[in-house]
Length: 485
View 1 (tube, helix red, strand yellow):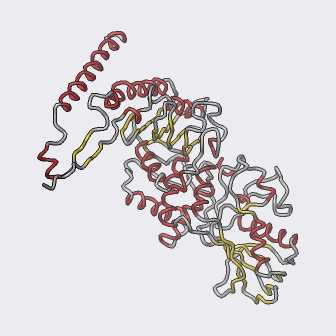
View 2: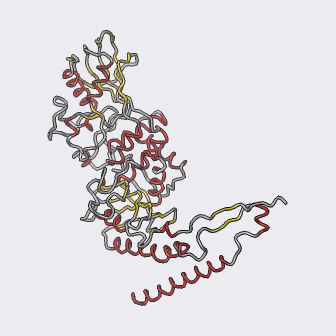
View 3: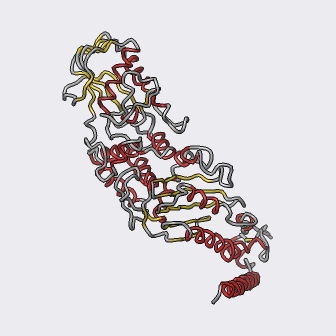
């Protein structure tokens, strides 16, 4: 059969479907909506607001026979010409519109952060705060810490000096100023530390990099060395001049960098701290000096998703493990997240989670799982309102600019050298609301543009009037007046 033959064959099939739909409506029209006897039994008569033969009632038929195939054909034609392979799943009002390899598992990149976010919201809770504790093995009185000051990390990933802020791609990225940490000690009346300042990051396992990660992640700022006590993503170059930008930075020893930076800022703020800055574990018997609390977990999760922050994802995953089983390890966090996803009835066929960020190339996720993850995250309204918006915020801030998708697509992004992914929602050009997941694995010189092109094609669904405007209006119920005679 030639392409022309195929098109000729499809037309009568669609026309037959429309004829059958019309016949069904005529049959429905001939059926009484409520008999007088029914009214006497229930005292309620159902009256259709939309006439039975109104064009509004043809929306599902028109969508199934025209709009759905048009979008499917468009996406499939584009993806067939794209190097590699991809899955796509699109829903409109809960109905599947596009299902292209939706059950095939692909490397999802940062879509994996959706799973980490669900684990955080369920196990830690939106109000949970990470604590950086200051304790001493000596005396603390009259503003003097007469002994060593231990800084015990609680996993807070957002502590940042003014100088490091300049490296952020997004100027609106959430951070916690290191100056606020210093103010916490000042507010407790600390004026002098006579002993050493010692960084303790023993809350989490001492594994700085996931063993299966490519070594290239250890340079270039993809993710910081993982630690429960970290400032400036564990970068060197800020310990002596915390508030000045520098290009002389690389991954260092996070807890040591923290206490070295703290010592500098304490002295700059009038708190005498002349002892050594080093790392070590706090003894069992200590006195509390102060506690710095992070922003609520809901804000940490929002920062992780909006900016696709890999370090935040990995530290949150370890905190999930700590709270769930008392083990601040990646392995414990992964087990806890999977248990939560199972309890949420999220389909896990083919799902493999190796880390919290999605950096590992061994991670696997199907589009069906990805959409279920997005739909679950969407139930946390304070989270989905902060997801990246095309051409406006987060990791989509510089993408889909001056396009149909600008301001209309809200989605979590996923990007690696061989992965491009999007999961979220869109209000299409005709005004239809859809949810979608797209995961592409393959090397394409266009990079992220592949995902942007798919998003632009989604914006055409469905051409013509808004489908919800064509659907039947809700039936009206009336109660007949009763005759008391």
